[in-house]
Image 1: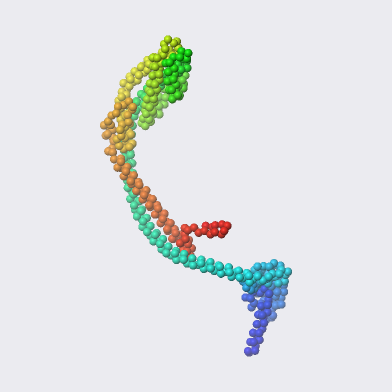
Image 2: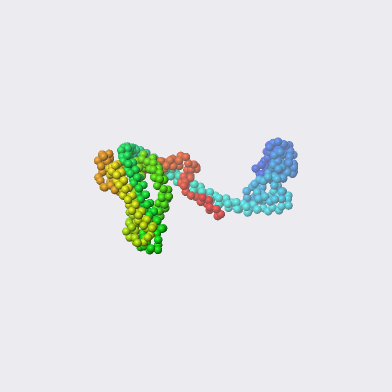
Length: 494
């Protein structure tokens, strides 16, 4: 029995030695490359059994290419490179004896039957590989230590963030309560202010309805006065222009020269006045009257239905009236000097015509002033002007919620606020009430901003702690928000 076992062991040892001699065979598969009881080789996929002598005979018999581990006969086979001193590898059978030194087979064993003289560089590659492995191990070790450090930091940081979240949630609850109180107070004060505003608007509306007829009467009176004053100024301008353009310079009359100089100063300051006077003269008195009537109609339609528009029109008309009065005074003084100082021995027709025209102007002026006075007397313009002043003062006082000095026309005397205005106005509390509302609004926005800021912070913390992927064991928590850069020489990655 012992002898039989020794024989079997010898046969197995011989078979393994034979398989070890098979070129290109992976040692892990050596036990499969021994003849079976029939002396045959069984393809590794079990699909075929062939004589063992046909292994590595450079002819592909097995469908899986397993019978040709050391040749290129099977395109689906593989060749084992021992690569002593480096890492063993397997290459495709198609690369065996193809005349190319494959780096995967650093020992050159795949080119055993080709013209390629492939040196064995496995020792050199193995050394470099081991050095690279050592370097990688150092880096991985440092990385592993850094990872553990980050995990430890993350554990503490997560607790800190949880505590911070709890604290800010409490602060947010307090901020919401403060905001709600501030909003309620602001709304109450705004509603009170709106009620006062509605009451003021009601009083303003009553003022408009009560005093609009007075404003309309005063505006129409001013409009009528303006028509006459514009015509007066045009007459004076045309008289002065005729002397300037038509006088006889050979007389060398000093009064005429002075008149021309004074008029030149006026036209240089107001060049548009002369051109306007010429245009008005060219249209004729009838056309001018029709134009003025149309202007009055348009103004009535535009201004007489609205308190503010009518008041604005009065301000504009009063300003123009004052300007016209100043111009007329200046131009009349120039002509009066000419009239009193020109040399009457000179037969200068233009000068004498201007003197006569000035006398005619003064006559017309007196008649117009008398007509204006009669119209004023008829409509009681002084009373109208006073009531306009009172209404204007009362209206403006309502706008600022306190009694303001009355705004009077230039010709009206200064007066105390009338009784009706005092009765209509509320007790002046604007400063205190407005300050209280301003303080409430300021407190509201302060509370609003605090609530908004805390809400955002709480949401950010919740997202960080519950919704953000921080890696295994929260490893990225402690470096979240930091900028990490890698300089590769050519580029810097961040």
